[in-house]
Length: 203
Ligand code: GRF
Image (cartoon, rainbow, N blue to C red; front, side, top):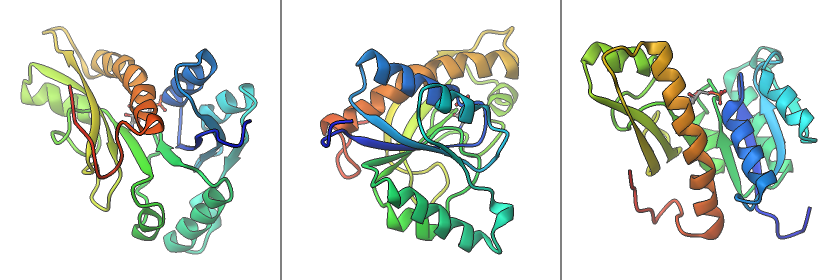
């Protein structure tokens, strides 16, 4: 990997379809970055297999192996640091990062969230959107700050809701949108078009 490669570390907890989309765009040449490591907080995350299949270093760090959440966060931060990432991408990482972690990598962490933020922060977004009778839903890529799902939004993509949609069908639609926008958001950071202090949200 050339010395000037934009270095990513990706944190996951599960399937890793967004990780796969990032890998695919790097391989296709539409995302000018390299993934230095994929780290999962669950040993059974399928995303670890996706990483290894692509020749990427894949590690598991389980919170249960540490005496406190603080210790875990510090160990995770130390491990991430070893790769000297330009950006940390959360891709279905289902654990809240501690304040010390966020401070240590301030402005260098992004997340993908399955809703049109600021609507529907937190979990179960698809069902909540249906319950509210909304006409549209979507996905957002945003910088990570101390507040959950709250940092500056880099890009969003809308999906229409049909009367036949269920939480499961909406999840599929939103996933497709996520796979489109996450590599685009990261590429905008790579090129310097956006950064933590200067972004133009668009839909
Ligand atoms: C995505 O819907 C993402 O928005 C949310 O977790 C899900 C992860 O899916 N944060 P995958 O593991 O990338 O398939």
